[in-house]
Length: 101
Image (cartoon, rainbow, N blue to C red; front, side):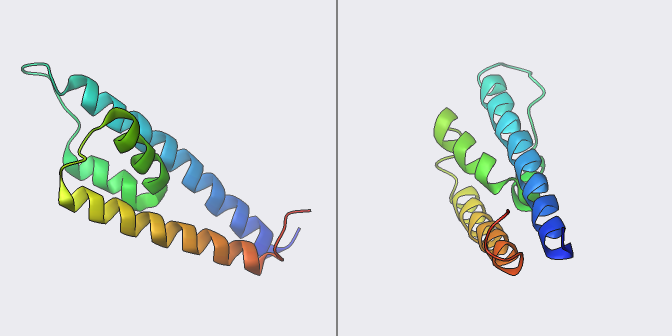
């Protein structure tokens, strides 16, 4: 296995784990949003997981739970992070030889 393939697989793993974490955090924050005095997830935490590889999970979490959908900053940040993360993943796949045999 070449270095490029290993790098692709590691990056893919980071994206999957970060996306799962972001999705769960959006779910938790939405669940606690209606409760008075609940300790909610900070917006900085949601954005951190979004830009740290979890843009796909953040995108899906926002859609599935209809959470933070009216906040333009979240829309722009999630969209831009998703664009960059997908582009990086495609580039690494291309560098790895286009396929994982």
